[in-house]
Image (cartoon, rainbow, N blue to C red; front, side, top):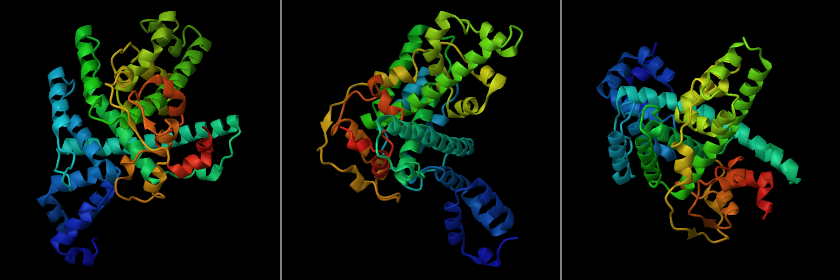
Length: 386
């Protein structure tokens, strides 16, 4: 039963309450409890649901979420014409969207809420995985580390950067992730060209964040591939995992299959974050089925597109530029997420190179150097290294 006070509020105040709800379950509970709230909700249903969907994400990345919402509306499988028109739309759209965002379809709202929860899972998984590597790096290099601060909860700016990177990754999957086993190589190459064209919308540092996500996923997929191979080799010929490995074409144990493993991973990544979460959370036969049923070469997805991004002019940042002055200690202030990270500046001696996304920076990407707040990097000891 709704509170009498809630029932007597004006429709404007009731609408303000619904605009600030960030949980589907909370909204459902309120609508069930209050007939008057339900009447207000019915007058602007799509608007309130759109607000709810966008509140699943950091406030600084709503432009990126809006692009993802548009990409989610593409018919699947998306044609080259669909992709080309959508990219043109993204390239010429005004980045200063009015808030609150215009409503989107109910199906897109549901998809955004699900993706928001999935991205939240990946952000926490990334934090645990990458900070462990950073701690291990400190041990290996005998760095002076503040373990408690290094392993602390994410700052708001860090969560925003990670959400933005995963959001860009999922948008990329919506645009270019459709399996194309039946397409001619020429058409596959055209998808690749469009993917490289799409990434030109973003700044080099944004593409570098995307490359960090790619490397994180490849690292975990390598571990999964090796675990499946070991399970298959230890199993008998009649075991289900062993049979799956032999039925793969090329066979999982062949030299050709090993050569193609990175390409297999590229295809598995193209299936998007919800599928990747299932792979990472599964084990045994279920995990083997997920991986082996989707193991075929995919040459023109994220790895090639990111690595071959069109060059941008290198611009200089003063060496005494202190990104920490603009990052805040975990509070949302202005355009924090868009501020150049201290790790990025440290790694490039005050310059932003034009070839972000290439493989030589992989060692830095393993511990997510572009995402972390200055105070976390100081706690890790890496900023003391030249």
